[in-house]
Image (tube, rainbow, N blue to C red; front, side, top):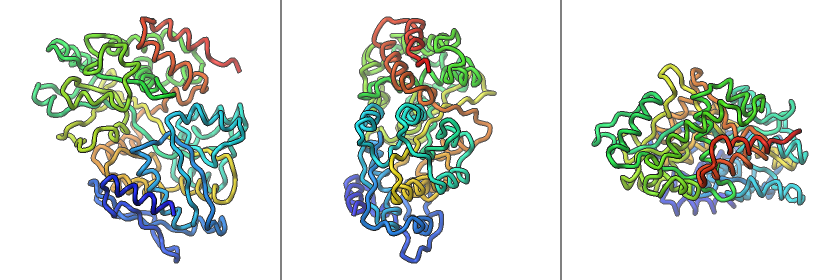
Length: 460
């Protein structure tokens, strides 16, 4: 079965056999949790098979999944499917590509969609529903799970025109800055608590002759998205959450003066040759530097700070220790004051294009606390969290993951979902991605770039 193939893949990564999750026995016993000390050793994990028995005998069937979750994250992603495969006899056929956002609509129009797609943007869900009528409403078992384990906001992200289509999956905290604790300590630098503190630190590092920041937005067909994260985080900090909401819903134009100001504020770092691009080149190199590698100059001492989400933890080279006293760690991207904590979040959603019993059963599994805890147990190196309230934080592998989970669960966090993921795909994953790349690669001004993006907004 596929589970044995994934066991071999996990063994190739050097993970212990304890990582291979123990599925429930034929009796259907098992709790909705697992052991583990959360310190990086994966625990065996059992699930209750009963919820999947109502879909009938699924032995020998298969479900195809299409996603952007590529290696190395794909190893733990596929391992998390094993309890479901063992319970049901279903084989999950996994296909991953960084070009999925561009290719999925093509496959839908050609009549060749996958059974399930892991959608990285609610905007893409909206496009697939409103333009192609391709995604099926979620079955009642999935909606019941989401009502139990997720907040109303997260359910709303998977809803289009009042119909619930797509359950949330993983969740990301994007408002982080990666750095080297030892470099900071040796230089006598403090982790900044406000935006002004961070800018003062940036100037101090530059005055020493070093380049403070490194960045890269190249990501195949998805090139540009890390740059849009920068802008979204700054909009939250300079204009505030209400304006942010008006921006992504187009209640104000994309080139509203408050948005142009946010571009200019980000540009004080990203367009300043004295501040970027440490170890990688000049300002224009941001457009071509792969996002996967853009933080690596920190390890070489040629860059001091790199803004990237919690999942960047999985991108560091093998052997890199992520800890407050390790090779690298991350601090919260400061707000304008210590009284505010705006946080950019993101996540994936499960869209189904077929309604066979095995597909609905797999949707049900992915929307459950079973899957969230299996995924946590299958991720011993860390780099994954979820806003699923059935997730046992003790199963999370690292202190950093637990910090992200605390931020997601904290009612005081003013969280906003990635705006480019919520905008119409023509803009969010189209002109916004392309425009921010051009902003780095050329002398185009913030006004010119935002004008072009505004002109691309669909009229209906």
